[in-house]
Length: 92
Image (cartoon, rainbow, N blue to C red; front, side):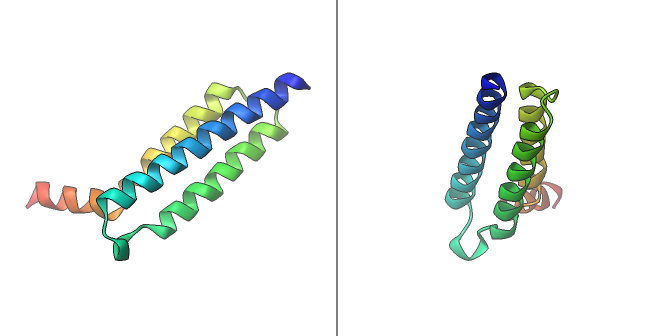
């Protein structure tokens, strides 16, 4: 029981740190009117989903949950305005 709680806490910590880093990076790189609120909301909902799956299924390893959320973070960040502007600048 303690091992399940500690693994869920470690996944939760990673999700919170990743979401905060994403929010700060977007805050510093985008204008206030271009802030990706939708992507931030998707990150929060995805984090809740990963945490609840980790809490429900004890056979899900911490590294799998952390890796899945890390890949999800990369996927969400690819669809933000600064990244799309960079890709458009590269191909023009």
